[in-house]
Image 1 (cartoon, rainbow, N blue to C red):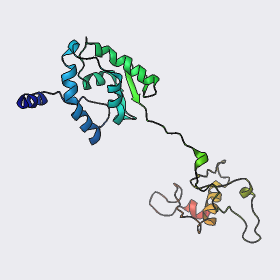
Image 2 (cartoon, rainbow, N blue to C red; image 1 turned 30 degrees about the vertical axis):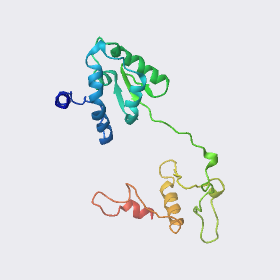
Image 3 (cartoon, rainbow, N blue to C red; image 1 turned 45 degrees about the vertical axis):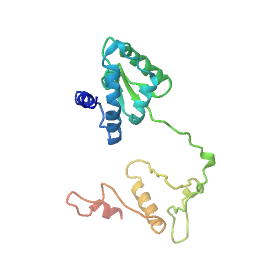
Image 4 (tube, rainbow, N blue to C red; image 1 turned 90 degrees about the vertical axis):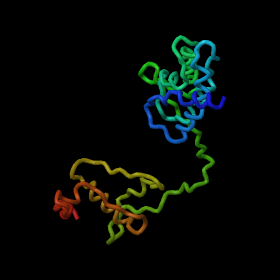
Length: 208
């Protein structure tokens, strides 16, 4: 019996060429269950029809990946002409109704959906107050632009300064950075600060 089982393992077909690179967990899952699936489905009509729950369990480690009907048939060693050959399509459409799969444009192609957990933002105990942030102002008399009356900045925000060309966007950004040097870690990045030879750009010097 043991010798026959070892012989059967050696005769197992290799893993099908899937449109993703399986990680070690997925690979071990495939190899562990392939032996049992091989003996259940390869003989055709005498074997039990494949069930929805079997497909669901197989798809668990494949969230976010694409899968086709033919790849599922190859994975479960389902031959054409058997009950399970057509059942795969019905099962996949039922799983699509249950939001486990999403049909794609190509016929017989699906994406395994990721489970999305609801976010109860009203239970969040994190800080909801705006961060201490300084906007440009005159350092002689303290005159401000009034931006601070219209804008609140929270942790994780991204500020976008939009405007026509040569209307002071870079000047505004540099002033904001200068005002907040002592409040946040600051890094200046841009394509107009260095020339092609790696030296400081004359345009940047002129603006400073």
